[in-house]
Image (cartoon, rainbow, N blue to C red):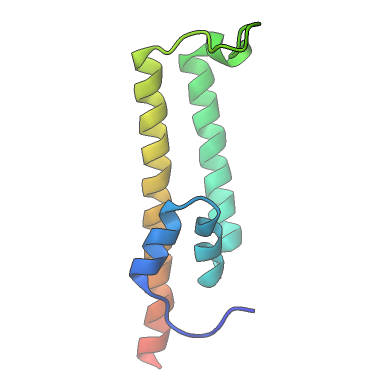
Length: 108
């Protein structure tokens, strides 16, 4: 069960950056369902955009000799930007909800 106490913004931010711990950070501020829903919808949107931009890589990503078909610089830039964007979204959401969570304890 979640402890009713303020959370550390610094620790929550670090948790938001690290995979799996971001789920724990959302759980600590009782926003796990909303966080998972947002991140799943964002992932679906990224997948659709990825297919629209790079349709040939999605269909056959690995050749028969188990080597990637190509590492195009535009693909790498796109992949890096989507990864950084999703991490930044996670950090924003967790920090925002953590601030709201801590406000509950300052007013009472």
